[in-house]
Length: 523
Image (cartoon, rainbow, N blue to C red; front, side, top):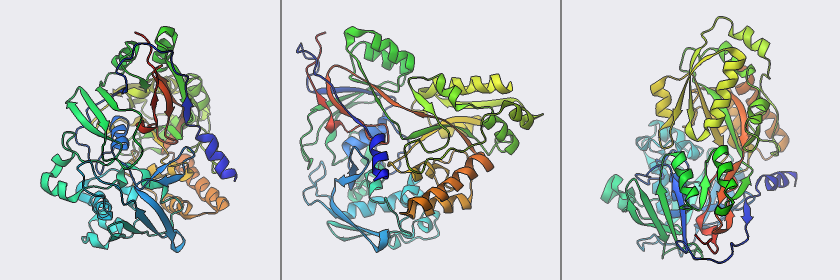
């Protein structure tokens, strides 16, 4: 009961707004949104980044389940499912009324093909670790096993999917909402190759499909006439492509978009101050953690004394204090509210930090994403003020490959973050597992991996707390591979045209089919 209550507190994800007084409609029935980059190929087996691409994939496709506002799985492409053998196997029963946007029926074989493709090392999927607990998946991913038929995913008939796991997984069904698990069409990939995922050609089965595209400028989504579910209230979506955050704010100021995401605190205040625009602020709790990471492949990043020094020079309360409307301080990986929460870390101690730093080099390169520039500046200033570091700060723009830039620059330090995929504490440890595609630190520890896997398979809260606390201490206090900074709120600005809006309970995206448009404000 306490566990469910904690999830409910963290998942207050809907907001109903009063309709704006009737006036002349602007793009009536059309939702207007902006993303940072053109999606390129919409291959959900290979996509490794979030935001714009994720918004498209979650609204053009669906998985076996979706998560409700409390983070619990509900039927989507699967009408029902059962856990067998203590959670070591799952049987998913597919709906029989689902067809792709070209009219071809969905089959369980579409999932088998897709998952084999994700796990195939030739695909180079950054999220392949998501399916690593399927029987024989590690051996297949490494190339040790060549026969994909030996993977623990089979179609017993056209509408039944059997999944066998290497170990019990309490929340395996919950993870089936994520885009890496979406089905794919073998016939189209065989016919077109990579071109099967071109936005002009891709076949989908979600509530929306791509109707038009001006490459690099704009996408138009329309309702998918073949969608099995309720007809979405939003008829069309106009997706403007603009990588510059300032220009996106200008679109908002000109009432050209209806939802503002990833704006800076200053931009938010400026837009809200213009009362004639009618923007409303909606804040949602975030199941995330922003952190200062160390690149262990570099000489300084690989030096434990250096990592300890910087960790003790960071005061999360000070950092969060510079972002009063955006974040709360992080005292560990797991946010307060989840039952496995526990503080961890070396603590703030500038004197000890100087003792550890001693004669080590104070010149360092620091990489941070443009969308989190305010946090990047706060971290930079703290390290300069407290330790006298000489920092070369490099901003990585939206749409750029952060990992590639990390390799190119050889940066010793970087700012990054992680959002839990479901409301479960183990999700905050996955990025540090040795086989994770998102272990930017380059850290490997088999003891840590074993602890996280034990927690994932345990239904006993006391045992789960114990092993996760030990794993957290190992990463943050002994190895010191990262420093938790803040847990960010998910802040959106909604135009007066938005009557109802719900945010996904974990990751910062939304289902367009849940949005309701009201009367637009007179222009």
